Length: 69
Image (cartoon, rainbow, N blue to C red; front, side, top):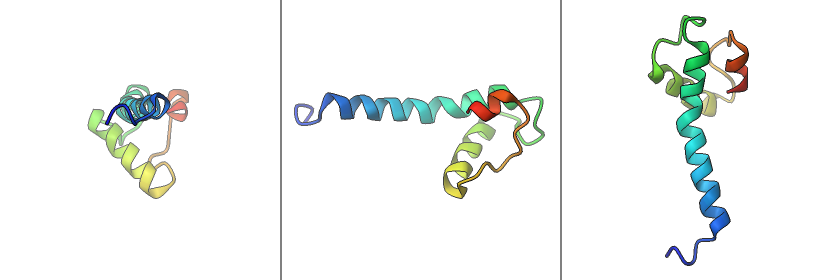
């Protein structure tokens, strides 16, 4: 099976998975203490899923790092 999957597709999938794994953690690090809705890393993942399904950020971002994530 791995012989049929191109290297570029595999690297794209790994990059996408890493982005979905670490972006909420980065968001939590940037917004904790500044945003009353962000309390734990779980809040970062809730932000990710709500942003993906609602097509807008569910929280008002309060830091420059929050806008980057």
